[in-house]
Image (cartoon, rainbow, N blue to C red):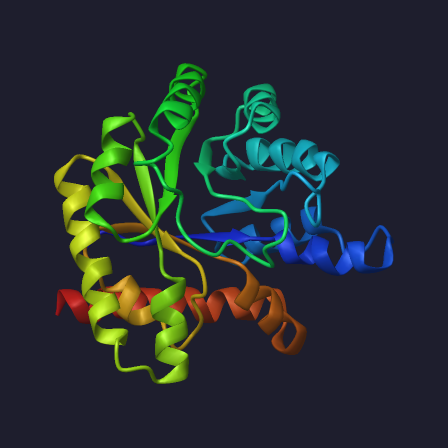
Length: 252
């Protein structure tokens, strides 16, 4: 089975920095440490309200990932401002996400069905600049089909609801996992590369990593939290090991 890539989201290093208005901890330093620890790429979400990652962070992240030959996955709302920033920096990938200023974190997938007419031109502009476009969506057949129809090359499946159900011991967890599996199979059948992310921790990573169509996981908040106790490098290495174990067990 193909090795599963790990993208590390360093947004919440910036959250800690911004809480005091200091220059530390530096999310770019965290990105360099993540790559040294085995991350395959770096993910960063420049929000419209700049609550964590800043424009200067994106400048520096684009430079260091390019220098190291590693991908930068730029998470962005579907707005003219964010499109212009993406086109200026030309990251390896842009993941289109929903964004509401009042939300604590991304609460659900992008509604590609409803937003088709707004999203499709942005996808076309990004692709014309050789930026690989992903849509962050719920595991819904209509959203998968719509993502393919607008020309996205990748879908990233929102795993948050399943992860929360597992942690809370809810009875619907198995059904949610089946939806993720079905969406991954559908997306792959439509020629889309399949990623997943949101809410993944050590407890939940292996069932997700075992989905055969998945090519990449993007994980951030849990890893940054775990780094407080064991360090960022060991936290990433432990996640990487669990991902690899899941793939090996699936192949056996």
